[in-house]
Amino acid sequence: MEKIFDIAKDSEKSWGVIAQGIDRNFEELSNEAQESNTASHISKVVSSSIMPTIIENKQVTVDGIRDASIQNYAEIDVSIFTDGILRVTAWTSTNAIVGYQWLDNDNNTTFVSTSEHGGGMYTYEIIVPQNATKLQFSFFKEHGISVDATYTARIPVNVEVAKMAPVISLAGMDGAVNTADSISNEELLITNYPRYVKREYTVSLNSKIKSFSEIAVGVGHLTTRGLYVIIDNTNIKVVMYINNTETVLATHAHNLTISAFINVLVDYKEDTIKYVINTFGGSYYGTDTEMGKKVYGDTDSIELNDIYGYSFVYANSETTLNDVELRRTNRGFREPVWIIGDSYCSTDNNERWPYYLLNEYKIKSWFLIALAGQTSNDLNGHVGAYNDLLNALQYGTPKYLWYQIQANDTNAVYEEYIYKIKDICDKRGITLILVRHAKLGEQVKGKDWQTKNSIALSLGLRYVDMYKAVTGNELTHDWYEGYLSSDGVHPTALGAKAEAMRILCDIPEITQYN
Image (cartoon, rainbow, N blue to C red):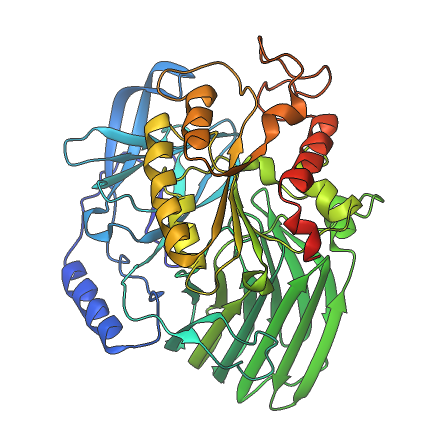
């Protein structure tokens, strides 16, 4: 990761913005991308010469916690990086606050992140919004702040959909590919792909080796809920990234001399990860099962399914890979039933309906793309459900699409996007299924569950009736006793089981194909 700035504790020094050469670098990068007919996005640092401007002693309120606090900001000009991916790792000492905000051209705050409290390191992978011109990290002078950052330019070019399986890959058809001439101390990503696919994946790497020390291959590198392997000259490690922590779940000696070239396959499905290394010195195959138990430490046979993120290959500073080819696919693209959802679709929690379909009823013939807090539109640096769906439709077409997204949308956004999705489904011959939600917290003007239910039902389409699954009183709309959690939004285990059964009743096709 290219270090952009490091602000020492109690530093009084003010930095200027050093932007010379950025336009030229960005222009060269664009030209490189246009010459390629395979890469969806190029992973390359184009912001290494930028230093922040330090804004000191500004009175602000941070998330309502510190009223009229004196605070400092480290500010980066991001105006030339619109719609790119910025990965930032921030660190502060004890009791400091780590948070960031975007500003537009008029210095209006367009988004403030959830602040993290206490000493530690926090990693953000965020898409630069189209209207953002500045990124500010807040910090208190007595604690200081240290920030590393890399920028991945989202430069659209022709996307190749792989029609042949790569060497030693189980991917088959319907995969995505990205290539690079060389990578070292950086990663290659595939971003023209649904970001929030859960449950399974297949990623393969084919590359020549100039020098080798360590690489990582898989999904969600140091972000979100990643699952990947780290390979060095001695071992292969299976790693889960969760809660800003890399946890090694298994370590195996591969007994290989890695040189000349390397092929890697990582395949994850139904609580089992398989991996293959092929190099000049031979091959190694391994498998680890009961991944849920390794992560959660329970004995309830919970499968590890709540993983997602961009697929990647990362080469450390002592490794140089040449002629790099990275591929990704999911068997789920071939499933007849696709589900696009939000926090109701968490797979590893017995207070969510997917837990029962997967772990108790063993019904697995459905493809899931979901994120807690997900909205139909792109929001707060996240890819929205609509664009994630568009990415998914590049690689497959379902027979049935249950669009469970509703709760986090405003009424206007939901109405706008539900018609867009209906239009796509009509043109592709997809049966669109919506949701009728139960009461979700307090009513908010412009964002209420009843209005969105009315919009959904007005289209005359099929829907999953979550309302009837958990509601005992149609006058007060109150949930059955013991069915609603204390947050007033999500179900308890009882409520989740009732919702799971309602899904089986309203989408019986999900059992036909199992």
